[in-house]
Structures are given as structure tokens and as C-alpha cells.
Amino acid sequence: MKRDNPIIHIDNVDHVYPNNTSALKNISLRINQGELVAIMGQNGAGKTTLIRTLNGLIRPTKGSIYIKGEKNSDKSIADLSKIIGIIFQNPMHQLFSNTIEEELKFSMKNLGYNKEQIQHEVDNFLNKFNLAKYRDRSPFNLSGGEAKKLALATIICREPEIIVFDEPTLGQDAKEIDFFLSLIQNELNKGKTIIMVTHNIEFVFENIPRTILMAEGQIIADGPTEKVLTNDFLVRKASLILPQIHQLKLGLKEIGIEVPNEIFKEQDMISFIDNYLKAKLANR
Ligand SMILES: Nc1ncnc2c1ncn2[C@@H]1O[C@H](COP(=O)(O)OP(=O)(O)OP(=O)(O)O)[C@@H](O)[C@H]1O
Ligand SMILES: [Mg+2]
Image (cartoon, rainbow, N blue to C red; front, side):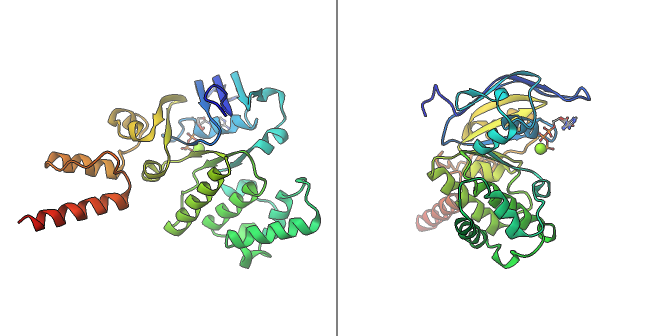
């Protein structure tokens, strides 16, 4: 899809909750097909409210949203949910079946598969997500991290074109974060568009090319992550702390060590420092 034809176009959207909380103010935003975007900002900034407007769970009190060029106010939540899959902050809100296997089977209904195909796909997902051993267990007896994975599987198996995650790395251990990373890479390779709401600045700095910062219902920055998340003023305004790798770069600069711009991943930084020290020792 071309730049002038975004898959998501949010045009001047406001949302005021019935209790008069003004959660979104003048939000305008375009996201192209195949993009990977982070939305960050303080608690209560309006991030969850914003993503809920995408599939019609929240209808803006002002402004319009276009998904693939079509106004979403003309569409039902059910129709929008076929295009946009949201994995919520609290996975328990989207799980309801008696067993994990049933939960996945339910998600795969109405996709045009026959019984055998559904069973095949369900087995596939249970194995891929390492949940096969729990297939007969209630989703409510999973650990927080496992429930998050199941919620993720129930959305991904429906192949939505746009996938939205609310705090996917919260409470996940390092192995699960790696699994999540390879999963989003796989979805991106299929041409999916991915939006991730998160407070995990280190994860975003290393892995997500574009960042939208929100504060008090407004977008205060939207651009390349390496620019947005190294801007001390903006990062503070969004109640975040500068990424550690960037802080380390600043510290090294102060003592005369210039780290090249393209180094922003922990592993690359370790190699850089390692090589620097080796070169120093060799020159003694
Ligand atoms: N159902 C609701 N009714 C009234 N006000 C609400 C409702 N949901 C959220 N709000 C308010 O709207 C504002 C934005 O909330 P939202 O949940 O979108 O924030 P958030 O950026 O997702 O925060 P967090 O990082 O804590 O998840 C907050 O002031 C919140 O108190
Ligand atoms: Mg939220």
C-alpha cells in the first residue's frame, strides 16, 4: 500500500467518556500496511482508549477513523474484528471457554474450515505456542504469562490484517519475549500491520522502528524510534526514562568514547565495548 493510502487513518478524533473524562484529544494518525509501530505514554494517557476505537469497541465522540479507506463508523464491531485483532492488556477479559482447546476451536469458527481442518489448525497452534500439555485445562487455571500466550493464539489464528497488542511483554520472561519477537517477525513477513502499546522502552528501542508518544490524551511525538526515544524532553513528558543503551552512549561520550549511531542493541553495544577494550589493551 502506498504512503498516501494508509491501512489506518485516524482523522481528528476526540473521545469523552460518559463520566466526562476527555481521554482522546485531536488525535490524527496514519499507519501504512506492513508497519510495526509502538504507542507509548504515561498511565492514563489514552493508549488503550485509542486502540479500542480501531475495531469499534469505542466510538469516537468527534472525528473519523478509516480502515483500508473505509469509514469504520459504518461497520459493526464483528466486521471490524475480522480485519483488526486486539490482544488486550488483561487476557482474562477475552477468554471464556471451558478448556484451552475449546477456546482455540471457538476462535477458528466461521473461517470456512471443516471440522478436520479446525482440529489440525488447533493442534498446530497448541504445539507452536507450547500449550498442548494444557489442552484440557481451563484457561482460568493458566499462569498470567500462559494466559497471555493463549489470548495471542486465539487472535493470531484468525489471521487479522492488523494486529494490536496492549502490553504484550508485561510479565513475560526473557524466553517468552523472544518467542513474541519471532512471532511478530513472522506476521510482518506475511505483510501484517502491527501496533504495540507498551511501557517497555528497552524493547521498543531495540525492536520497533516507529514510536508514537502520548500524554494526556494527545499525541506529543510520532516518528523514528531512535529520534523520539532519545529526546529527553519528550520522553520525560510521557513519564518514561531514556533507554539504558542511549544513557550508556551519553555516558561514554562524556569520557570521549564515541559510539556509532547504528549501535542501539544491547548485544551490539557489548561487542562494541569489547572491541574497544581489546584495541586499547593492544595499543598499550
Ligand atoms: N470506561 C471508562 N470510563 C471513564 N473513564 C475511563 C474509562 N476507561 C478509561 N478512562 C479514563 O480515560 C483515560 C485514558 O485511559 P486509558 O485506559 O486509555 O489509558 P492508558 O494510556 O491505556 O493507561 P495505562 O498505561 O494505565 O494502561 C484515563 O484518565 C482513564 O481514567
Ligand atoms: Mg492501557
